[in-house]
Length: 553
Image (cartoon, rainbow, N blue to C red; front, side, top):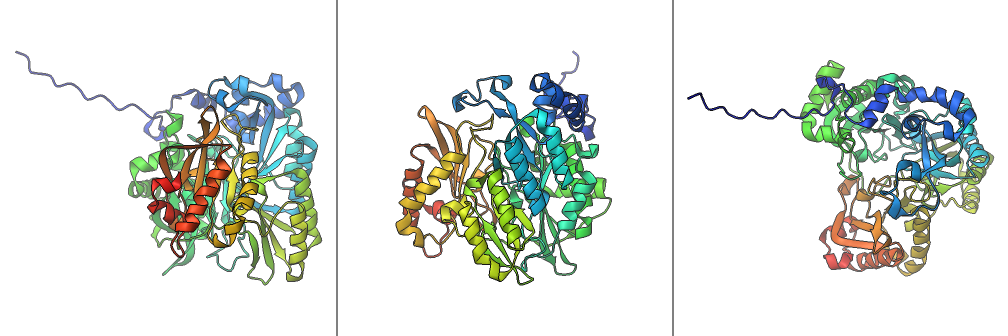
């Protein structure tokens, strides 16, 4: 008899990793990118689409490559959230665009702010949102106007290059870089150098998915939620440098970034950044879009192997081991009046859930210039910060800012509430967010006025229109994921998430959902229970961790 044959083991399916020789596109998105680099669409926008109009745009450019230049089609008005997953892309598309202005490090001059304001009022129906990626987002943009908008932005040193797409997105940076007495070092040079060397370069213009970066001398850039982050730290032997984190990301499979245990001197940050992006480009999973983020590769490899590949294949040297940055308790949103290390002051203000307008931004530029400042910053918390204010100008500037809706001394709920774009403009959204969040803040300011003096810790409220977590719902004290509830707009509730000292994902109660109409009453109820039951000094996330389910309903 012939020998018994054992079944051969099935070969693992390739995941589209270029470094392993899997170069053939494994899904339509990868095919589009292989057919033509997304950066090349700019020439077609300038020379063809802006002259022939929306109807002339190739669908692969419209829903793909346009993103490489910060352009998404808006949601067609009047389409309810229940239709989001039902309709085809062309049925959801409006003939207008959302345009994302890239602001690396959140740094703006008065001239740049005025330019964005002018574009908003002239071409965007006076719309503008400050995002939690430190961008400013405009709406109602026509393709016919895009070339002149680019010309105006680039004349003042701004761009929309790789503001979206499978690219290195905007680099988060501290709004108070260079002026804070608490920062370990000012890493502005590294942010500028990364942008100069790599943004808009074909070297990194075809990544498996988007890639989010953050660099700061302070732990104020939500570093745990980025693909790569460098956070200021003092090494006992080598002095000031940056601690390296990789693999963070939220959305439907949230993961916090992991420390690699490496201390990086400032001058090596761009090279190390490029090494990590190179690993993502070459080893990242390109078969399935929902597994194409760096966090999945890191989860499979582990921090030790990831660091080993970075050092051996991309840097050609070992990195220095280093200590972690200090943990922080409160979110670093920089709202309020704070002294700079030069004796002047910076003022952080809270637009209502990040919603501003060209008119507001224009008035802000005028007020800032009239009070002797020339620098404005956006933050990763949908806030704005005015730098370099002399002490005798602080109160009069605050009065002017209040008059245009920018509060320097906001209520707890106005300060700590964020909302994504939502159903108003976003094709992925299921529920409306900005208006609802603003109305909820106003309602809570009245409903909880009697206990406002007892709320001496942040209670963050983050409102998201879909599961993608653009408003970081899993790491909020109260995170709300949009979905249809009881046949109407509503939310899955996440409670007790946080970053820093309380780093972790919110508690999701089984089956617990609220409708949009019920939201103010629900938040009031939970906050009152927290106020009644909390121990001395207890933070909201700590209380949620020990509270009974009944107290959180």
